[in-house]
Length: 371
Image 1 (tube, rainbow, N blue to C red):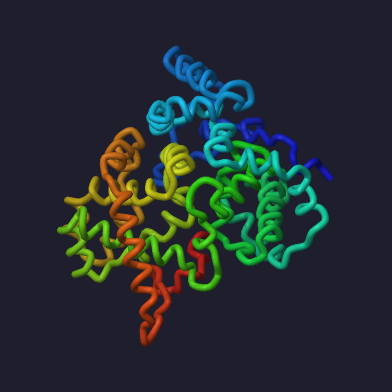
Image 2: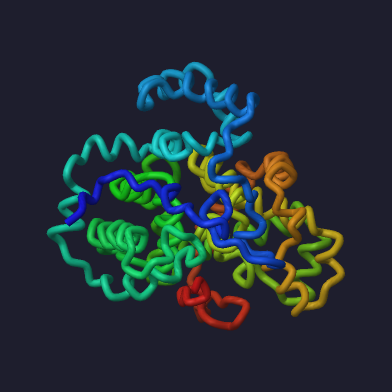
């Protein structure tokens, strides 16, 4: 068996002119992730400004991350500002491991990943195999059936389903692991997934994937609905009139952290901040999208409104426009207050507990919509 901890370099697969600089197949006249990506050449050399940025980051990180913690303690505001501007792509995998706490988990658990992959069995193995081809199907790393990409993704998801049998495997997890594997080895991706779901640095995400009603999804959607009413009152009222709620359009934002259907350059920039600052950026980006398109959304009837909420214009997807708007929206205090209110409401039993529905009327725990 090939070593499960070998470094995976998706860039080595970018041999065709039909893929963009991120490895996604190019498609003409499409609003998909692929065509909205920056079609930078694979062998594109960084310009002088980019080289300067990379040197700054290397100085912050140190050899293999040796200076990172010291730099963060000394200059946290500098680190935050630079992460919000975007981590250099050539350093992204290492920095993600450092800011998520996953590097520490890996060092404290030598040999555990290999044990989980080789010697353990999972009740979710058939389900994982079924879903593998649905994860970034237009990326060359995952296109070949039973190829290196699909095998790596299977190994990471199978290992996590064994590591945490209470959560096991849920389809949306594939997009998290799939994104991570484009920037790091299997073992590194596994421990970053553990760091996210178990909460090494920020609040644990495992509630987004627990089979019993996806409790964290329901909590986040409730909080987001309240934020919309407060920060965008006219649009919030329009949503009420048209009977549109966040479960119809925002569930995937939280479950996949914008990695499912959003342009890849935007998803990467969001992930940079998400791993450092936590889930609040998902709320901020969601509100920024609605604010950016506010004047158009407020005019639309139900069906067109739902379509627009799942097909934002390319201009709204520009990270250099959207993210500064998102960062200007302060949500931390209100999220804490809404969380306390939500927990109090949960303590009061309701006569009937209705399932959370998607826009198609399917219960939200059925994630087949991620196909």
